[in-house]
Image 1 (cartoon, helix red, strand yellow):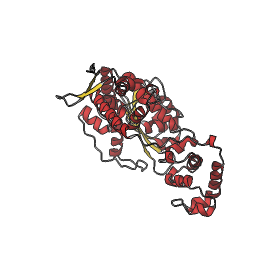
Image 2 (spheres, rainbow, N blue to C red):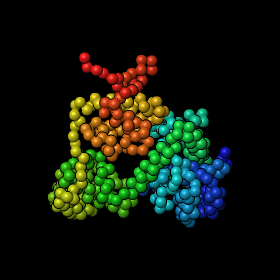
Image 3 (tube, rainbow, N blue to C red):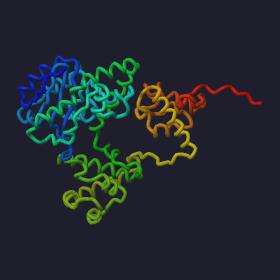
Image 4 (spheres, rainbow, N blue to C red):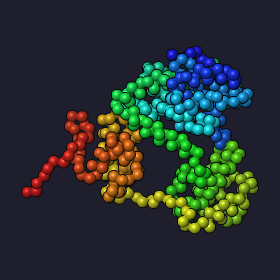
Length: 401
């Protein structure tokens, strides 16, 4: 059990707390932040719990008075496992301030999806199902940057780590029972890649603009350069990207590049102040992008509608996927996406070599080979009349009469 609430607001108190943390084999960690007005969300609180200690750390107060280097050394100690829930943002914020991703970590939301608790299960729901405890949600929309924080707010924040260690024990036992500890490690490696991906090169940010894949390659080159500029500008001003320029404005500029400042000012959604401040720079970026040779254009996915007969095959694979997920007590969305299944169907040959998650690691063992065998006609599908579930078996031998 954890100790009573401990609110840390000074470097000295944090140093004393770190002495209690450094010999622990694991710690639960969560963060509270405000992200509406800055490029990097502003870290406000860090909640930490071990088997015999718990605290809420006031990040701005300690940062203003000293350093958190000793704390980050503990958090990033590879001998200490970090337990998080839906932890991508928490891990990313830790990585921003610590300079590296805190490893190893165990994400209870991912683990829960692997042992029958459904996709993206909320922490409060998991606490209810595992512990039978109903958490208070009164402070869900608290402004964590406001000070002073009440005892009720601090207690609410600490609840986010209070149950994590026991949930970790429960999920680890179920994963071990199902033989899926190696599987979940694969998923944590994928999450680590995704956390690192948030700090990818600015020139690759254009791929996060919704609709970019509908552009022609030359227009995509314009979008790439504009998105890279926006990334640097937002970081320099420490404001959200959309505060500099919204995605739809970037797309409009890429589709219909203006040639003169008057055309730029006429673009719907572009702030007049942005045109005044950076108009000539934007026009120069666009001109430079348009002058790039085809070899420097981004590769845009081909927008090809699936063949009519493939639609039914994808639906068939979806039915097999859901049946296999139910049988294995695992969230279907953790196994494959519709686009993965479409890619399998579209590939007429050499399907087994496609670069798809469903054909790698534990996913291939659990489902990928099964789907390949279905598409290759090596399995016959049927419905069990008692359970109503889809089953499969080798097709029966036939002889033509």
